[in-house]
Image (cartoon, rainbow, N blue to C red; front, side, top):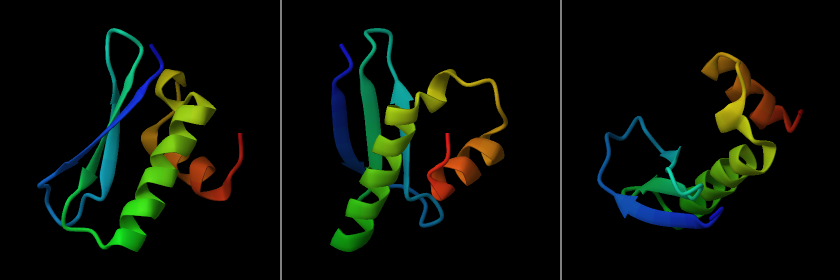
Length: 74
Protein backbone atom coordinates (compact mmCIF):
# COMPACT_ATOMS: atom_id res chain seq x y z
CA UNK A 1 0.00 0.00 0.00
CA UNK A 2 1.23 3.48 -0.97
CA UNK A 3 4.02 1.97 -3.05
CA UNK A 4 5.16 3.78 -6.18
CA UNK A 5 5.53 1.50 -9.19
CA UNK A 6 7.33 3.09 -12.15
CA UNK A 7 7.03 1.81 -15.69
CA UNK A 8 8.53 2.98 -18.98
CA UNK A 9 6.06 2.66 -21.84
CA UNK A 10 5.58 3.87 -25.38
CA UNK A 11 3.35 6.97 -25.50
CA UNK A 12 2.67 9.82 -27.88
CA UNK A 13 5.45 12.42 -27.76
CA UNK A 14 3.00 14.95 -26.30
CA UNK A 15 2.63 12.87 -23.12
CA UNK A 16 5.58 12.80 -20.72
CA UNK A 17 4.08 10.89 -17.81
CA UNK A 18 0.96 10.13 -15.84
CA UNK A 19 0.06 8.38 -12.61
CA UNK A 20 -2.86 6.13 -11.74
CA UNK A 21 -3.66 5.11 -8.17
CA UNK A 22 -4.91 1.53 -7.91
CA UNK A 23 -7.40 -0.22 -5.62
CA UNK A 24 -4.61 -1.27 -3.21
CA UNK A 25 -3.55 2.34 -2.66
CA UNK A 26 -0.39 2.05 -4.75
CA UNK A 27 0.60 4.61 -7.36
CA UNK A 28 1.43 3.43 -10.88
CA UNK A 29 3.66 5.97 -12.61
CA UNK A 30 3.97 5.64 -16.38
CA UNK A 31 6.87 7.44 -18.04
CA UNK A 32 7.33 7.95 -21.76
CA UNK A 33 10.24 5.75 -22.83
CA UNK A 34 11.18 8.25 -25.56
CA UNK A 35 12.24 10.91 -23.03
CA UNK A 36 15.85 11.78 -22.31
CA UNK A 37 17.31 10.71 -18.96
CA UNK A 38 17.06 14.29 -17.72
CA UNK A 39 13.41 14.60 -18.73
CA UNK A 40 12.61 11.20 -17.21
CA UNK A 41 14.00 12.43 -13.88
CA UNK A 42 12.01 15.67 -14.08
CA UNK A 43 8.82 13.86 -15.05
CA UNK A 44 9.19 11.33 -12.24
CA UNK A 45 9.80 14.15 -9.75
CA UNK A 46 6.68 15.92 -11.03
CA UNK A 47 4.55 12.78 -10.63
CA UNK A 48 5.96 12.19 -7.13
CA UNK A 49 4.96 15.75 -6.25
CA UNK A 50 1.38 14.95 -7.24
CA UNK A 51 1.50 11.88 -5.00
CA UNK A 52 3.00 13.85 -2.10
CA UNK A 53 0.34 16.53 -2.43
CA UNK A 54 -2.56 14.06 -2.60
CA UNK A 55 -3.68 15.54 -5.91
CA UNK A 56 -5.55 12.37 -6.93
CA UNK A 57 -8.13 13.02 -4.24
CA UNK A 58 -8.66 16.75 -4.84
CA UNK A 59 -11.86 18.05 -6.31
CA UNK A 60 -10.22 20.55 -8.67
CA UNK A 61 -9.88 20.75 -12.44
CA UNK A 62 -6.72 19.10 -13.79
CA UNK A 63 -5.42 22.42 -15.13
CA UNK A 64 -5.61 23.97 -11.68
CA UNK A 65 -3.85 20.99 -10.08
CA UNK A 66 -1.10 21.06 -12.72
CA UNK A 67 -0.56 24.80 -12.29
CA UNK A 68 -0.36 24.45 -8.50
CA UNK A 69 2.08 21.53 -8.78
CA UNK A 70 4.34 23.48 -11.14
CA UNK A 71 4.44 26.37 -8.71
CA UNK A 72 4.96 24.06 -5.71
CA UNK A 73 1.85 25.39 -3.98
CA UNK A 74 -0.64 23.44 -1.89
